[in-house]
Amino acid sequence: MLYDNHGRKINYLRLAVTDRCNLRCFYCMPEEGIKFLKRQELLTYEEMERIVRVFAGLGINKVRITGGEPFVRKGLMGFLWKLQKIEGIDNLHLTTNGTVNTDTIAELKDLGIKSVNLSLDSLDPKRFFDITRRDCFEQVMATFEQLLKHEIPTKINMVVMNQQNTEDILPMIELTKDKNVSVRFLEEMPFNGAGARPQEELWNQAMIYNYLEANYPNLEKLPDPPHSTSKNYKIPGYRGSFGIIASYSRLFCGTCNRIRLTPTGVLKTCLYDGGVFNIKDLLRAGATDAQLTTALLEALGNRAKDGFEAEGKRDNNISESMASIGG
Ligand code: SAM
Ligand code: SF4
Image 1 (cartoon, rainbow, N blue to C red):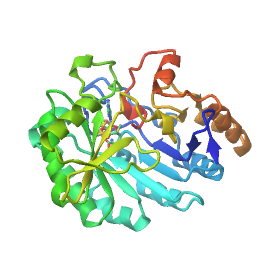
Image 2: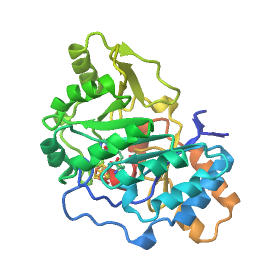
Image 3: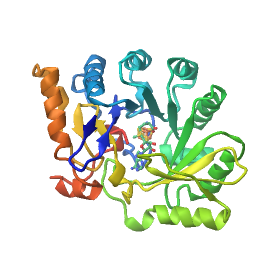
Image 4: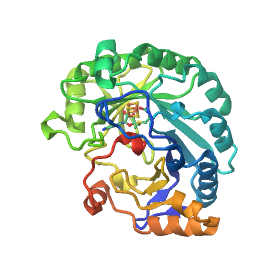
């Protein structure tokens, strides 16, 4: 078992396999001028597999594949099959924008994916386009239908943004009426490749909750699973559920069980830190598994207690794109 210096158990790795993406969600990256990584700067699939194997031996049992858009990296499905076979990894999950993988859903089911998070910020094609700057709404909805058809547990991630998509909040709740889906409303974070947005433009978790309660006074609190980042609810009689994620207010750090690996191999022990060390450099310098283990344990021994402390310890301000971290 892995524990950090605050006694929190660590069993969850978020692995970003690429920084590239076919969408340009404005809260994640600028429309133009993005410098994507060169291939040799990325961890190879073999390197990622080795890291996961070593981490699994230490107590990581849950892995989420993310990016960038994971499906724009060639060979992703083959990599997932390899991860699935690693002893100790019994919980493989995926986050995707759902634009390029409609035809992979049956195979995801076969390989035993535990759940898929589908990013969808609007149920209106025009607003979808305005947010993502790409005309891919139909593909995402087709992926959503496939996920439901194959009964893969699915969560929709919707970043709530003032004057962008707040009119989608209630239709998203209505989606849970007859579909077995969990919609999660996320606070926008400043990882947009440019820097902070004015605070008055942000909807925080309290605003989201108050809005929902005003419209659904009968909403019912659900128990939150251990380490859950969301506060979960449902409307009585509806099939699905919904949750609010205080991703910017950072209300869940006390039970955080996750670490992150960026596409370049930087280990992050908090979303808000500036990166702890580069595993790829260690690997390419010939590190043994024991040396990798030592480096990980040392990082966990110095983990910030929450996202505010992690941000405060950075030697630069947050300006990177979420696509270079994985969310
Ligand atoms: N491309 C995939 C996708 O969009 O699902 C995976 C990577 S994306 C970086 C992972 C998650 O981060 C998505 O659900 C996205 O909505 C969320 N995200 C990206 N930038 C964000 C931001 N600035 N604030 C809040 N969430 C953000
Ligand atoms: Fe791409 Fe996901 Fe970022 Fe949107 S949120 S630009 S889909 S990586």
